Each structure stands twice: as C-alpha cells, then as structure tokens.
Length: 540
Image (cartoon, rainbow, N blue to C red; front, side):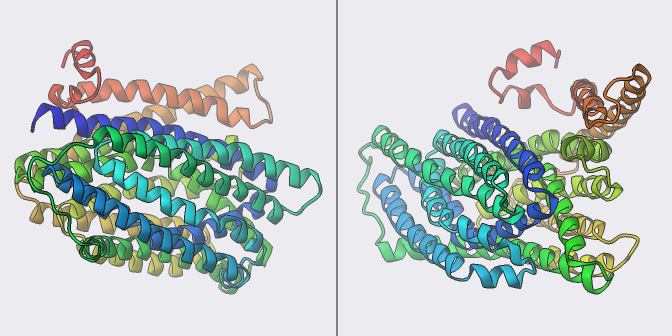
C-alpha cells in the first residue's frame, strides 16, 4: 500500500474519530440533562419521535451517501473529474427530492405515527423534527461528495455544528417550556427543536465549504473525460445505494417494531399500565445514549474505509485493499472492545450517577446493551467492507436474519415477568451477534487476499477483559473508600465519582495490556499521526 494512501485512510479515520468522539460526548451532554429536565417518561416520547425520524432518514440517505462516496472515489482515482462532478449534481437533486417527500410525510401524518407507535404524546416531537429531514438529506450529498474526495473535514465540522446547536437550542427550549408549566411531552418537542436548528445551520456551513474544496480540487483531466448521462449516473447510484438502503431500513424497521413491541408486550402480556410501560421505555432509551458511544469509532472507520478500498479495487490493487480491510477491523476492536467491556461492568453506577436511576433494571439494561454496542460497531464496519467490495446485497440478508432473531427474542423475553424490559436489550445482542458473525464469514469468502481474522480479535479481547476486571475492582474499592470517608453520602456522586476514577484506571491499564500482549504492532501504530514517536516510547 502506498504510504500516501495509507496516511490518507488513517488520517481521514483519525479526523472523523476525533470529531465523532466530541459529537458523542456532546450528544450525551444533550440527552442526559434533557432527561433530567423533562423526565424519564417524556424521554420515551423523544425516543419514539427519533426512531420514526431515523427510519425516514434511512430511506432517504442510508445508501446514497455510501454509493456517492464510492462512485466519486472511483472516478477520482481514474482522473475523471467531469464524472465526479456529474455524480455529485445528480445525487444532490435526488437527495433533495427524497428529503422533501420524507419531511412532508412526517408533518402530515405526525398524529397517526404517534398513535401507531403507541405513544400519543410524541406527536409534537414528531412534527418539530420533520423539517430536519430535508436539511440532512442535502447535507448527506455534500458529505458523500467530500468523503469520496478523501476530505473528512467538512463532514466533521458540519456534524459538530449540528450537535452544538442541538445542545444549546434544544436544552434551552426544553428548560424554558418546562419552567413555563408545559408538559414533559412539549418539553421533548423543545429538545427536538435543537436537532432541527442544528441541521439547518450545518447545511449553511457545508455548502460554501464544499464549493471551496471543489475549486481547490479542480484539475484538467489527463485524458478525454466524457461523463455518463444523468440517467445512467442515477441508475448506478440506485443500483449501489438501494441494497444498502434496504439493509439499513430493515434495522430501523426492527427498531420501530421493538418500540411498539415494548409498549404492547409490557401492557398486554404483563398487565403493566401505559404510564409504567412509558417510563420503562424511557429507561431503555436513556441507556441507549451510553450504549451508542462505541459506534463513535465505527462511523469514521466506515466513512474512511469505503472510498479507500474502492479506490484500490478500481486500480486492481487487491492486497492494498485487504490491508485497509484488516486495519479497519483491528482498529475497531482496539477502540470499541474496551469501551463495551468497561460500560458493561460499570453499568449500574453510570446509570445511577448520570440519570439518578437506581432501579436495578436500568443497570441490567445497560450492562446487556454494552455487548450489543460492540456488535453494532462490527456490523457497521463489516457492512462497509462488503459494500466497498461490491457486495451490497449480502448485508441485506444478514441484517434480515439478525432482525428476525431480535423480534423472536424480544417477543419471548418481554413477556417474561422476571426479564420484562431487559429482554429488549438481550434481543439487541442476539441481533448484532448474528449479523456480525455472518458478515465476517462472507468477508472471509468474498474478499481477495483477506487476512486471517481471528488474530484481529483475540488480543484486543484479552486486554479488554483484564481491563474490565481491574476497573470493576477499582470501582468497588473507591466507593468503599468514599463511604468510609463520609464523601458524597446519599448523592449521585457516590455512584459517579468512583465510576469516573475507575474508568481512568481502566484506560491506563488497558494501554499497558495492549503493549504487553502486543495487540498492536509498530507498523500499525505508525499509521497514526505521531505514531512513530509513540511506538518508540512504548518500545514496540
């Protein structure tokens, strides 16, 4: 693999990882205070609206940005600048049409959607979120284009703008509405308002930023470059994008079925009241804020890997493409595994400290979901690898298999009184485990020069498990110490302070274990900016 392209892939992933970590932190800063402002039940209304939004957003944008990024990267690798431009213009028009249709659907049918999902109080939040769809669709066109050119900065900055606006405007609106005596469901709509404002301002940033990048990148084609017709370009976008959309929609449909099933099974099978079911769903949604944190590392890896692999395959460099494949999985494991393990062992204190939720179900949900969070990361990376290799249809089958598994597990366990809401978390684990295993088997068969996969998982897993045991021991010791000293008695900090310190201990020990077990090589570390100095420091 050429050193320039190696750096391009890893630096792109590094830029997106840094920004995505910041975004996830800001997202937690948004959702955790929002839950405390509007209450756990109203947070369930927020979650219902967001699940509907996510499905419509997937229908509009899930596959086309990936297809756009891949097509732009392939054409750019071959020096076809006119085709690059044609692809972007066609995709942008398609995204706008899809976004408008989705926005109008969400606005017109907001009441019906809320009733269908079994949460009638979510109507206001659904209506408030609708305009965000058209803005996000347009942003996705610009993001796919710049990612295909190997520049991840516009995507990163626009995402940060989105999230900052969500925090500032969303929390402010929710707080003002609740202070004025409005209901929690209206407060949830206020929180959603920040999401909509963020998409508008993110779009305002990315349009001129992309135009500046386009001017810098514009070069005369080295050979005659007659672009394909608009119809042919759109057809290719659809052929690549639709299978990805279908696969993603299956998961979002499963998430909507999950929500409806939670409300239905808890009330019908267990006899819970509507308010109890709504409150339990709020707990489940709150735990998802933390369980989604490991995916902060998956999104950058996916975004950087697809154009990098596609460019190498366009040049028939299968060994280099396989190196990106292996690096993506290895880095994903090194980053997401310890987060999932640490979150699993510290689930109860994290829920108690952040949300004040000391219900044993809250800790149990997050503990189980932490494994699902790791599964999400592997699913996203392996889906992206299959898509980059031109096997867009295969993830549809694996995702469908995982979705069926989740619904079956949910139906059985949600109706079990001793499991109830925790059953939805177990269903998530089953879903993503099935998808990830099937995807890995397909990659092993379909990717030329595919590296051995087992070594990419075993050493990071050993380091993560040892770290998790040490982190739990540190938490128990620190909490006992704080109690004996009379610190934080009766408050959330009695949970949160030792948990945060235990996380710090875990991070330090994990780095030590990674070096001891040689879970990362000097060559792999040198791909990271300043990695050569770090390798010398660690004596690799």
